[in-house]
Length: 114
Length: 115
Image 1 (cartoon, each protein chain N blue to C red):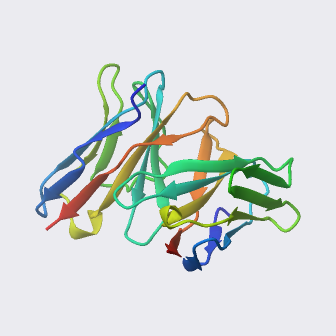
Image 2 (image 1 turned 45 degrees about the vertical axis):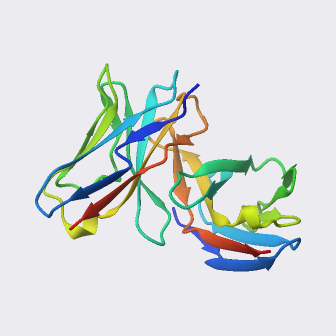
Image 3 (image 1 turned 180 degrees about the vertical axis):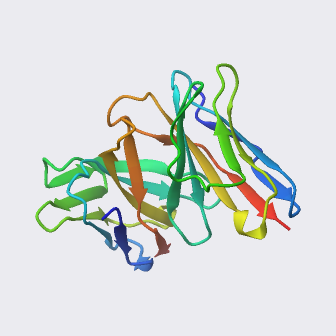
């Protein structure tokens, strides 16, 4: 049973470009969470999605960031017009969605904005 | 009230020693307390977790001690090994308004175990 998969593992973008980060949850998991980790900091919740639904986006910046989890395919975190401050590690986690269900993390995508 | 304070920021321990990392929280609604281990370049991996109905949980060399009245919990790594060198995050979880459990993470402790 493959774990949570994220790609790309490393992404370099110039200021003003778009970044697309992909996450495939563990088999059987229908709940996806995105977190951002800045250097020397803990993980900050961004958004929680179920298939075709955004359930909680209270941690998402109001502009330039969006997320989706379509019926088919991976979840996508999209950052438009990236700025240097967006440089961070972005982690995806998935769970079965049961109350208190354990979240399993992917290896992360390290975004560098030059 | 959603903050989780973790200390120390970094820790150096001799091989065979005990590593202790502490976390404190404020929100009494938290009811699940996991610890994650993260190696450089990797995602966090669940190490051990506890619910507030018990005061201690042990799995191998790893023990969580939980003090509900003080709203504190700690991770103890017995017989620390160089392979334990990693960053450790505590987390507190609660049932959010979205109907799912939300995780609030501490800022991490970078542990180095000297050979």
